[in-house]
Image (cartoon, rainbow over all chains, first blue to last red; front, side, top):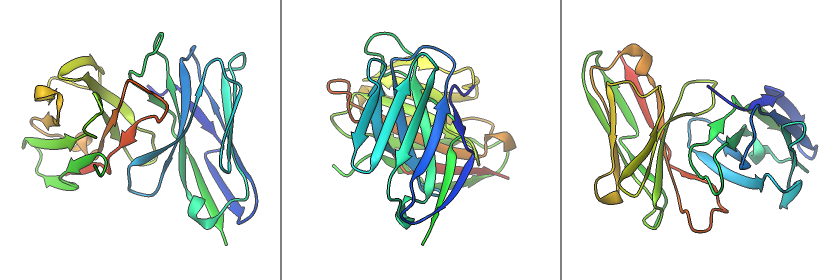
Length: 114
Length: 115
């Protein structure tokens, strides 16, 4: 079963605009991670946020985590055509220092048009 | 080290045949994970290893599926008596427990088609 649910399922924007996608999950987590997948390829790790953190930045990416609402958001600023991909959130439900299995959502498909 | 390597990239097999996939993780990574992904879905967890020990298996991993990681290096995933429902992308990932800041590193996957 999949723990996270991304919203929206699909997002179409123009270059230069910001893209925001959300992830909701059901159980308590150790950390939450975001991954990107280009069509037919493996996943690439983007950013990890631990359960005691509320916000993290990495380049044009900003991730927030609200454990009280069991939700996270990923913001991509000033999007580029190369950002076209599927984005997945994944939760680590394990105990202290888990790094066991990750539970992935179904993903948000983002299309950035020039 | 060029990352996680999976072979073959594509495999077409007839129903009822056995198939085996190989994954070579990043050499200093002691954890190795197998996932399965179908079209339009996120990856589903199958199993993971720490060194040579298999620590967890999903209920998805029926008795037709077996995974090994001899000597804690490469891993193999075997599917016996394949069924059409086994058609999917099989993804391998590895991670290093020591720093745990970079997430998993995924391979490009093996796409299995059962005809």
